[in-house]
Image (cartoon, rainbow, N blue to C red; front, top):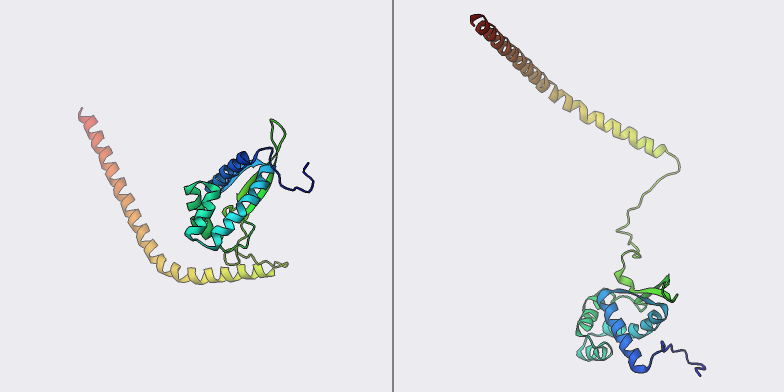
Length: 201
């Protein structure tokens, strides 16, 4: 009987349970997020968080060997002491998050997603420098004042520009008129030449 025993053995003997947690831990470290049953996720969190704490506190050969004895995966140890420890070094615990994802279709087991907190950009809170503050007032008078100022500035800018542009536009229109007259003369000459050829024929 399990009176007072709060450890969930997951219905497995000790060796099978240890192998399961090694594999789940390595997969979570390498993928940063995995889906599993809720019971396994809860056991995995209690198994993995002390290892993450050890990786964050001191990056020594002894710590790496201690963590390797639990994971048995060199790539996972390298990722834990490298990328993960650098990113979550400032966090004082609580490295993993469990989100319930409903029941499994086959047997109805409650499932969950377990992930590293700092590797999910969806839940990140933006800092004050990153967030753009939009200041609005209840009355619209400020907006109208800004619009009137902007219109006044536009008129100030447009007036000198129009004075400079007007002679250029007049010159361009004269050139266009000359080109049109020349094209009309050329067309008339070509029509007269065709008429002459028809008469000769």
